[in-house]
Amino acid sequence: SKTLLSVRLDDTFSSNVIATKEKLPTPPKMYGYYNDDSFSSDENTRMFNDDDEQCDIKCAAEPSKGGIVFQQYVYGTDWLFTFSIEGEQRFPVRVDENAWKRNEFYGTTSFKSEIPRAYSDARELLTVTVGIPADKFPPVNYTAAIKGASFLARNCRSMNHREEVVKKLIEASVRVDSLSSCLRNSEPPKELTPRYRGDFGLEGKWKKFKSEIMQRYLFHLAFENQNTDDYITEKLWLTLKSGTIPVYLGAPNIGEHFLPKNSFINVNDFSTTQELARYLIEVTNNETLYNSYHVWREEPLPQALMDKYLPVLGRNNCRLCRWAHARKYGLGWNHEQQLIKSIALPREACVNLGLIRRPAIETWWEEGEDGLVSLEVNSNESSTSSTRCSLDEKVSMTTIEGAFSRSVWSHDGTTDILLQGQSSKRLILCLEFPMKQHKPLHQLNSHTVWIQNEVSRISLVMVDDNGNGAAHLISSAESGFISIKMNSSSLLIRLRIIIEDFDRFHKGADQYETYYGQIMGEDVRSHPRLFALKSESIDPSKSESMILKTVKDYLGE
Image (cartoon, rainbow, N blue to C red; front, side):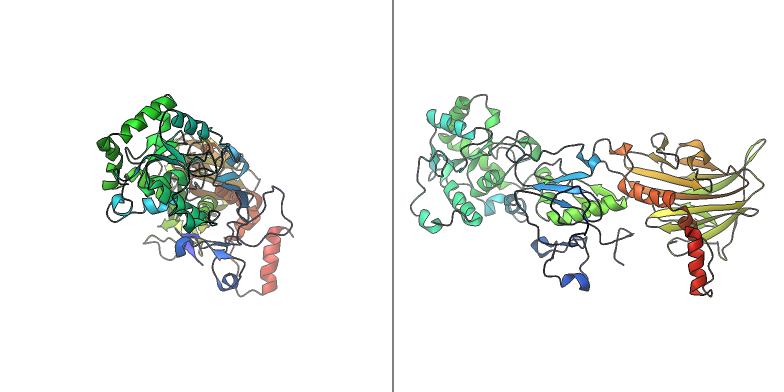
C-alpha cells in the first residue's frame, strides 16, 4: 500500500482518450496505474520517466497519439485536459478561465494552464548550474560577425505580420539575410549547406543548422508567428544559446518572464519600425553598445527566471499525475512549482483521555437553566494516559453521559464521528479547530457547512437518523469553534470532518465544493447505514453467514 503525504495512493489518474464528454462503455487502457508486476509487462504502456527519472507519483500511460492539439481524460473522472504547444491564435486553444467549473483543464504554453508547458529548447540554457552562461554559450565575435541580422522562417502568412516588419527593416537599410523559404533573399553559407542537405525536415538537424547560421550574424530576428502571452518558442531560446542578440517580436508579456537584463531587443519597445531600424544600425556601429547586450552571459541567470521555468520544463505527464493526485485527495498544490505540498492543517485523528485532540479539540457541555456547564467524560478504553493516533483500524469509543456515547475513527484523511444513544441531558458538542482567522461559517446544503481561510477549508458533514444535518448546528463558527446540539434524547448522528487545502489557482474556487469534499461528503450523505457499520461490534467468532446477514440488515437488503 503505497502512500504519499500520509494518503493512500490508488490507480485512478489518467486515461488516453479522444476527447468526448460521453461516458465510455468500456474504460480505455489504464493511464495512472502503478508499476507493479501486472502492469509493467504491458508493452503498450510506458512509465512517466522523463530523462530516465522516476516520478514521485508512480503512473503510466498507453503511448499518446499526440498531435498539435490532443486531449486526455483523467482516469476515473470526467476531468478533460486539452494539450497544445502551439499558440492560441494559430491553433485556437484559448485557456478559458471558467473551464474548470466544467471539469475542463489545459496543458499549453500559457501559464494560466493547470499544467503549463515550455519549449524544451530552454532547458539547456536554464540548466547551466556550474559556471556562467558564457562558458557554454559565448557571444559571437563582433569583429568577425556579419554586420546585420539573419531571419529564418518557413511560414510567410504569420498572424502578427512579422514578414512586413522584415520588409520595412530592409527598406530602412538594415541588412537582413532571409535564408529560409519566407522572403528568401540570401543563400546559406556553402560550407554549411552540404551537411544538412535533405535533412531540413528533421527537427534536430534543422535547429542545429539554424544555430550555426545565427552564430555568423550580430543579430537574429527571433520573430514568433503570433503575439500571444507566454507563447515563447525556440526562436528566442535558440538565439540566446547561439551567442547572437535576439531582436524579439512575440509574447506581449515577455517582461513577465524575467529574462536577463539587456539579453534581447524587444520590437515592441519601439513606436515604429523606422525607430527600431535606427537603433539596430546604432548598435551595429558601436562595439561597446553591442557588447553590453552580452554582459548577462558573464553572470548567473536571474533566479526569478529559473523559478518560473524550471518547474515547467519537461516531465509533463508526471506533473499531470501530481496535479490529479492533489486534486483528488484535497492536498495542497503549488502551481508555480508544480508540486504537491503538505496540507496546512493536521488531518490525523488523535485522542487523549477519551477525547479528540486532533484535528479538533473536543469538549462537551450541558445546557442548563443558568447556562452551559462543562461535562466530564469517561473513556471506554483501558488506557487513556497518553495520546493515541492512527485510528484507521481501531474505533475510539467514549461514554459522554448515561447511555449516550461518541465513537471516532479515521478514513481516507477524514475523521468520522458517530454519536448515538440516549441522554436525559441537553448535550452540546464543541469542536475547536486550529483556524483562528477565517471567513464566516458557510452552509453549503442541509448537511454540510464549512469554515475556511486563504489556504484551508474545514468541512463538517452531518446526518442524523431523520435525515437532517445542519439543523443540529447551534452557533456560527468564531475563532475556529463549531458547536453542535443534540436535539433529541434518543438519536444517531453521523459526522465527518473533512480538512483540505482548497483550490487557490482558479478564481472563485473558494465558493465551490471540491472534488475531494464532494466525494467524502457524499459518502456520508448517501450511505448513512454503511457509515454506522464501522462502529458496530461484530464478534469474529460468528459464522460468515451471520456477519453477512448483519451487513445486509444495514444495507436494507
